[in-house]
Image (cartoon, helix red, strand yellow):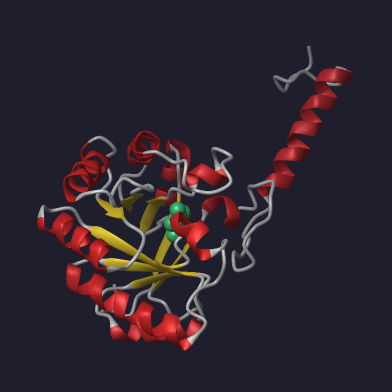
Length: 255
Ligand code: KIV
């Protein structure tokens, strides 16, 4: 798609029904992100998400999506400890979860070696640079990255290293648009941006953010295409009123 100049549309999903709907809409890639920990499970960050949780949600998504490419996030501590564990855990997301590829965060030498090894055993890998939520404590919060020349140059090197390791795409999260454009121009593999400007080869959003389906703050870059929270609250209120007031049966017909 990058070679043809076609933009790549990516959304997250965490369950069967949403995966079916996004597939029907024609989404290119469904990312079963470890953001599931925050937007579905109510954690403050993605660190408590386990491999078993990811397998559970990835299985549901893969039952629903028959056409889109399914990428599953490798959660914190499932790919950093040693190569054998990284291979086994990535393999479980493919074998048990039904994903076609995995995503790993970070870009140092060790992550590059891990990506290469996974690719060597036949597991397609997506990289993730910039704001990498699994490093939230090291980064001092969910802050934009790559704003000074030193971190920008490091990110360019990391993207090059990941491409050489064999990743098929790289997510660029919360970095300046001009840096994302430089990274995109420097790579053969596509970049998928989130809060990284319009010049990436594709865009990804967390489904709950773009549908207005959350009860908390939404990142400033996340455009909302619907306001489902409001609709859900009003639908629930209408139901409660009907049940309490006996104005109409909750089954939708008068009794
Ligand atoms: O976990 C996730 O949803 C992600 C996207 C924000 C890229 O990694």
